[in-house]
Image (cartoon, rainbow, N blue to C red):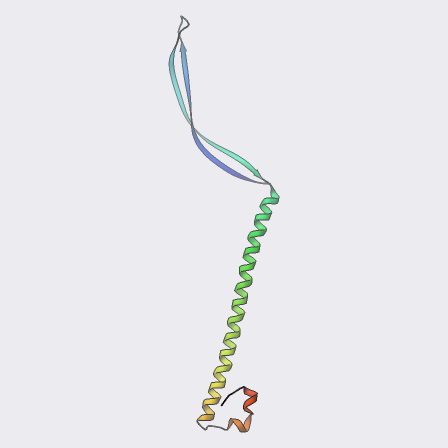
Length: 113
């Protein structure tokens, strides 16, 4: 079982009354003490476990979103590399370095003229 601790600080003043011999009373000395109090409040273990489970679920959700973003970035990089290769091949074809049509049909590469 887990406990939570609450600390408080307070002053305690004690006043003394002086009794005279004739039975009358008069104010006597007083004493002031500063106290530090701690109180423990028991928190059921099941509540603490539920809080930890909720925190873990939030962290796992964030981790899953981060993995999805990373995967999307990798796919975008691959698409960019493929597009760059297509552009380079198209550039070589335009410059007459080789005849791409004779090697591969344009439909296979997805190139539009």
